[in-house]
Image (cartoon, rainbow, N blue to C red):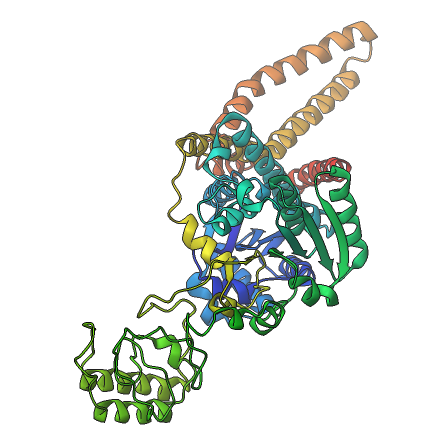
Length: 570
């Protein structure tokens, strides 16, 4: 076996890298085709989900295989090889089998124990079979992975350790409340009509939403999904074209999006326009946006000082006479020159009055130094990058969410900036990864790990035993030819033998040969099935001077039979 896996997942790479490396359907097909066309690989399959991209291949050279597969992943993902390499992991032979079996059982999922990965593995195998890039090794591997995954779910309580990404996402939206209580009476908008969106729609219907609107670029698929939901009778469902999403946003309480789009489907501006999110904040809750790149600043405590002479017109925070760099998100996008200008003003600004409640005030000189350091960073990279979830410098009162957004797409469908909008709560792949890291694992996980270990050992033994089978078959074929030749020679020397005598002699000779070969062939199969037993096939071929082409012909015949069987079962 020369199975090689090269990939990246939520465990090895940040969401931003996974997002950029995501492969659409056509790119997956091209990647698999290019892999089998490359020199080291003879079989290939790609497993691409919202939080993993893995390339499986049967290679004849390890180092050349790793280099080729890594290069192909970089080319087809559009992420440079130098940037991608630190996030790649490599598994080989038994470790590769162990990895896929663990993935199939949900042990490597973002939500431990989720069962949706089995469908994705099945789709990956079907795609490789359609492209004729899955030979005997990958067919056996992926089919066994599906069986191992089903066994884990049927024999253990791994389902209790986690749930589908959709259910987990809805739990995060519900903020600790029972999902069924939170969802009751809500109207939902589902963007997309693929497998994940369909699962989301079915889950929303089950937990009690009253209406589901399905929007998809292909209207027929949206209408079909709506029909299926209506057949359940517990929810009212209808389909709309994608250009109706903005209108539906004004009525929806929950939005779930999972499309194959390469760009944003919902921008922060579109959500704000549909919901009036900024206006909802009110003048007595959070001040309006001011200054370039600024986010809403927190209210000042009563009696705090304010200086309207700030050259950047920034609202003050924590009662400093200007703007504290602790609120780094507020200066995101500013040029170095603007930051330096502001630093100079802070350094010379008056301190706030001491009357009124006690407040914490940064030393202006220290703040100016911090801003200057930030300006140096901005000068090096052009502009200060925006942090997605900056540390708050003061408690910012926010209204209770009235719009809940769940983004399950990779790359993301919904602009991460919507988390700044009042009355809006966003849960996406990144926040789900953060939440799942703290989720407790069920005791059943240990039992699943034992199942995986046993199945990996059994699969490896079967694969190694199968590797020597063509050699054993060739040996027995050679022995049969020797028997046939000797019987023919005997006929020439003893032409007077009748059929009964000739038959008895033939049977005797065959029994002698079979008994002589039985113990060695059984034992060599046992030895070959053990770790490190691959060399026994070579030893057998050398000892009996077997023709390598005869052995190869047996292997081709077995592979052909296996392929026919796989095509019939897929």
